[in-house]
Length: 178
Image 1 (spheres, rainbow, N blue to C red):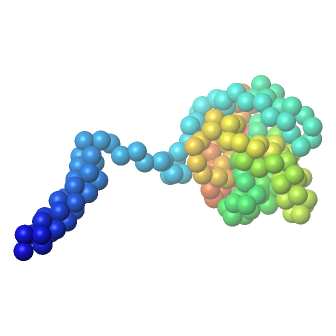
Image 2 (image 1 turned 90 degrees about the vertical axis):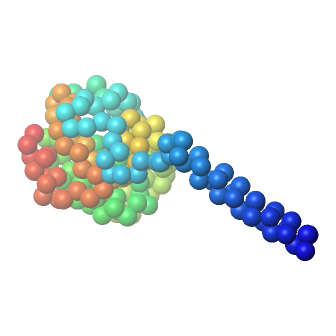
Image 3 (image 1 turned 180 degrees about the vertical axis):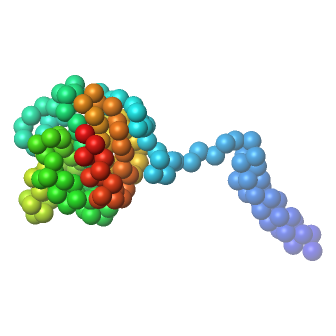
């Protein structure tokens, strides 16, 4: 009887220890939760573009300063992202329609030039892009969620932001305002 009682006490003590060690810290510490909401932007409408420099598929080096003087549509994407796959043809059609008045630049997130070029060729896209193998440029704008489309005016002030699903008509209206 004594060893059975000790065994049960040890089991009870183990359960209490596990419960307190996992739940008690929650009362004294704020939990760390990764922000995965669509509003996880670093910059907002009315902000100036952060400084960055990229190399485009056309071989040009383009910096934030080079964007001054012409409205711009910056599109962050990944070719394996389903929402991006739906949005890129919409952006392509707007590029075909407004590409002379507004600069369009697509910036990949964590993809090689070969991956993006293959996707562009397969889907017959002609929008200039910059393949980024990391998130360094993207992280200047947001911490999560693509596609992201930023529309700027001639002074690099952000006038519209579209996250995940851009309504084609709203996107076109934002572009036409410039």
